[in-house]
Amino acid sequence: MRFSADEPPPPIEDQLRRAMDGFTPTERKLARHVLDHYPVAALGSITALAKAADVSTPTVVRLVQKLGFKGYPDFQNCLRTEVEGMLASPLVKHDKWAGNAPDAHILNRFADQVVANLQATLAGLDPAEFDAIAALLADPERRIYALGGRITHAMAEYFVTLMRVVRPDVTLLSAMANTWPPALLDMAPGDVLLIFDIRRYENSVLQVAELAVEQGAEVVLITDRWLSPAARLARHRLVCHVEAPSAWDSTVPLLVLVETLLAAVQDLRWQDTESRLKRMEDLYEKVRFFRKFR
Image (cartoon, rainbow, N blue to C red):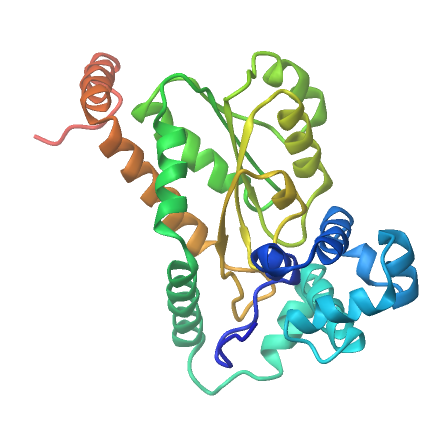
């Protein structure tokens, strides 16, 4: 595989999935083992990986070379760098940017990076994948649930606040484990769980995803380019570029995807959404919710 020198390569997990059709049966067996135990499976020796996957060491070498690496050490160095990025703390992120900060004002530096993130995110999206997600969210036969982590909970809450106007049966899940059983009690096969999860990935998010899949729900994931562990459970996923000159990643691309999904679902359901909007405006009028200027 060859990738642009101007863009970071996609995560190895993604590279394995994309290359799967070109592997031999034995290589596919190895690739599935790595994906099922990602990234831990490939952090040990080549001998340990081959033994765990029940393949030969030459199979491991052939697979990583098909991915474009010189050999297993090159592959493993890339994977370790990827894992370091996944686990980067706010302090590490800050130091990375502070050490190479240009002379431009922070407003310009931050805005430039956010625009670059948005462009890279949109360039990497498959319109067919996006449309399939919008169709799932617009389906009146499916309940919609949304969940975020410590930082991305705000994205889930914003999505739910507006999607509840567009359509019924939309629920925001809390990160508190004691709220999951009653919230998931009515989750049925075909319902949709929309997850927002960017580095450093939270165990609670993965646990809810696993519970939802057990219930037969379809998982839709909005994540970063390092990929949340919940990616292996997702039917659909949208990948965002989130790095910023800050101790924290930028969630602007996630917000743009949320608002674009809302617009897409609104268009797919406009007749029903229009009726709901009119009824909601009547309710606002009755409770005098908005201030009027005369």
